[in-house]
Length: 352
Image (cartoon, rainbow, N blue to C red):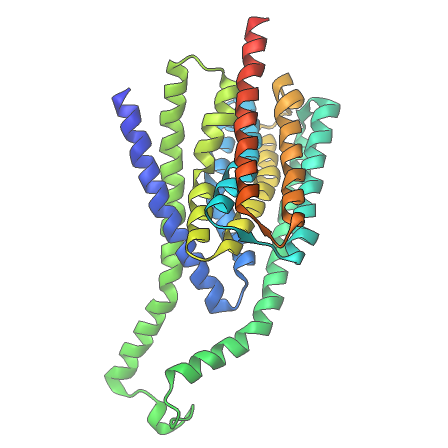
């Protein structure tokens, strides 16, 4: 018991440090390339913080536990919207962009509805549906890359010109003899510039690695503790495993908001839910090689809550130009009610 608690604490510290590195490096990359922080949040940060969900779900599917994979995705998506967004907004209100609501949010709604309809109609996620979800993820990535390239091209020239104006003295013109480094100084400046350019990417890789390792051991320790308490496997999947794998989103989003990057926080939440629904759930069905059967608890309770939370996210984002602290508190209460309902649902089922 003491060993598991120690692993939990050490894993949480690792995740916190990894989240800080991830946010700082992602913001630096966004600035260097002239890409919006929202785009970075929905791609690099979202995929990086969703790595634990992907690894845990694929491992569960490979080991013949597809229900854990499904519960991980459902529970993580609910936690991202209610717990992560709620906590982040409670600490610092999050600004909203019209483009985000118009495209990425409605794409998430479409994906969530697709999963819900498949679950209600077939009580499972078939391999065909899983492959379709993976293909949708590939298409979404391509769209994000094309959008980032267009945006980056329009901003890069002016960004580089501004940097040159700041770095060079006013009396020195670009290309003049006096502006060219010579001998050893030129080599030092070239190496220094290369390391300066490379540093954010090294920090990004380090942060993602720390998040993945920390979340992996945290989930293992939490799962063992839950088994000692005799909790149902489904409850463990949508609570302990889901919250454990969502810790990177929690840490990264909260730190992004605190350090003045709310766009990264919101983009991370949206991008993570899209990635979880498409790549994690779809990939789990493909890897398992058979349909992922969905228990009644998933179809009758967890999936409707996930769908309702997704719609609630849209209502909160459209209510004003930002997600306020009051709305963040409401989302946290919503997650607390979901957890209490989950306990009641399984208590009633066990009594029956």
